[in-house]
Image 1 (cartoon, rainbow, N blue to C red):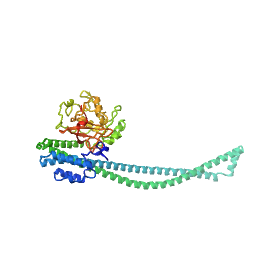
Image 2: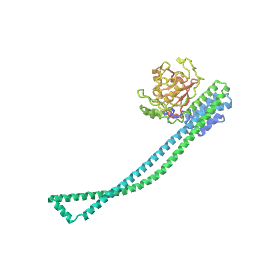
Image 3: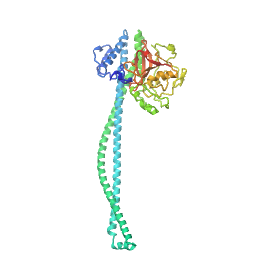
Image 4: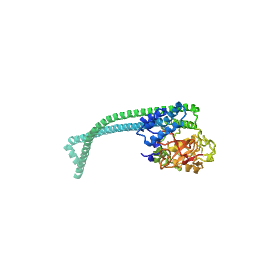
Length: 496
């Protein structure tokens, strides 16, 4: 797949390769320890050459910024970066794959169980039909036997003469005899029908035997599918535990790094450490709600709300369409509140007044506010499809105390729709701003969806003008996902 066709987080980002395994992982780990020469190492098959070179360049740049830092502290920073960039995304991808396998296995087990129940119901229905057929046959046979007794033992000459004597005319006599014959034919037909039903019953008994064989086979298959589903669930649980362990390791490494920041003397080393630490913190936020399985799917969220399903957005993992004329849908679950980022390293500090911006992070707009900063926010609750970029952007703005609308459309529409409501929108990044990507616009080493664009939240403005963002999307390895975006002035930002 070419880069041009990679959508949202679907490409798992160049910065966070979804399958860092084998030689590449080993080599990158050795770089962190400062004991290997990556230039001679070939990339793993799952990684494109462009991605591989970008990964090497990223590691090289980080290492250059740490020049002069003690080897022990530099190794800690590089190790944390490797957790952020490689190990955690790979573990998340493994978890996602395991969860998908578990869902498939459970679906197959459910289908096998349903087929078994259907076969058992067929058997019960046939048994009832056979039972009923036998009863009908017995009734008809008894009726025929009684008619035979009447014919051979009750039809005497005196009875015939009695009929003649009681008949006023020959026509009356004939009619009575024809009526008696009609009764005989009716009983005979009943006997024939009963015989046919008995033959059918015999065929049904053969079918019953076949169904019993099928039930035996289905029972074995259902048991096997149930066992496979259980194994798949256990595998997914193991992968979840592995991910949790990596996230805990990242948290511990970040705390250790925070305690040693005073040892960093150069501005480049300090900023590099802060970026790596914040990326780790963003990763850790995902653990607050990674296990929230009650979230509706993107398409299901819209279908349930009466809005048309945005299938394209679901595939891109970077949009959230809306219809302002529809009723408000139920809110998806909201993740736990992460810690608020500082403005350290930001090009615009609190109340800086840059381009008219006068808000700080956190802002002073209470969650759910319908009116804030002198204008209507358009906020009536999180109406965006779960796990989409718009869904996360809404949640994060609320967490930062900044206004956000419920129906700002797909990611690319946030700037224009927010401006129409009275929000300040410009091309100057600020911590907490919603960063808007036009359809097909280059982000880092991927492109925003050609139809829906993308939206993310600025978590940090770096000294070189780049921004660290957090973002969502159904195809992201985890939510929130983080990356550093350059050429920040090329994008629009929704402020307050």
